[in-house]
Length: 409
Image: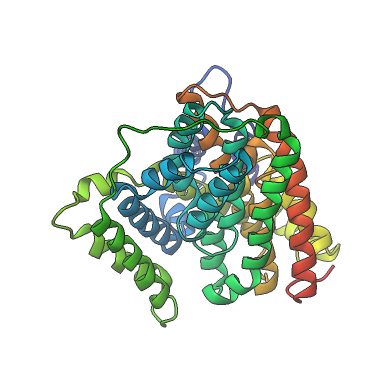
């Protein structure tokens, strides 16, 4: 039994690394689902065992946050903000700074994947109509979305998972991660201004938008109120996922916005990916190999409890299998992490996602959405700026975590 489960586990995570299967139109979610199907069909793992390995509270919290994000999207907040940023006066570098601030700020309180999905096509069209190359602005958008999302426990899927598994306090996490996240936004801007200086020397032309996105101010205020209530509930003894679901339920009970439309905007592919990876990593964690692996790592001091282990692990794992699968795998075999180490894992795995195009789901979303509207963001384009900005931001994060006492060397 163990050898078969281990083989399925290894093939699934190999699929996470490549992102597809030659000759088949399978993406990462499809690969993970196929792994679950194989385990179930083989009879090696029972439905009950798989179900018990799924972290339902994490999925509920992620779903609720997607409903809150849908409120903002249907209210026209993302579109209006992206359009206004793209039409802002000033130099190209100032325009880039505004894209970075908008994406980073939104991603700190809403899932970065959703922010990137909504803003990318509008930023591309707005920037292109001003006679500028959209690529440095797209890199600013996704670099800031990743960096900004590192600040909070609800900024991205891996932080949500780490916060739930470790029972981390929302405000303590913010105190630990806000400063390096904000500094990383500055690093994104400086790096792009240096690497893409020729493109950013061009002066933006005027933009006359005859059909600006519509902003429903009342619905936008409801979304802001929902976020404020969520922050208040995070200070209460109520489980985090329950409080978030209460907020989501209140938003769905609307006289103006269709619940069907809001629910359709949930990223079901991401939720399914989470569920499938929970099942596969759970099955692997029950094998003798996983137990021996955990004992060997413990004996050699190779658990990511120190920065010397955490940094290369986060950088390598996030840019091979992606930061969400990487975090799920680490947590499957690391049973006794302390809050400081979990905070470091969240911060460093998120910042590591800016290294290469495959580092995070947000990167892939931006590349695919930009391609759909006629702008190609290549692997080389991303790496040219992503590698230096990631190394610089991770260096800042390491120094901050060490000085603050969250993690040792």
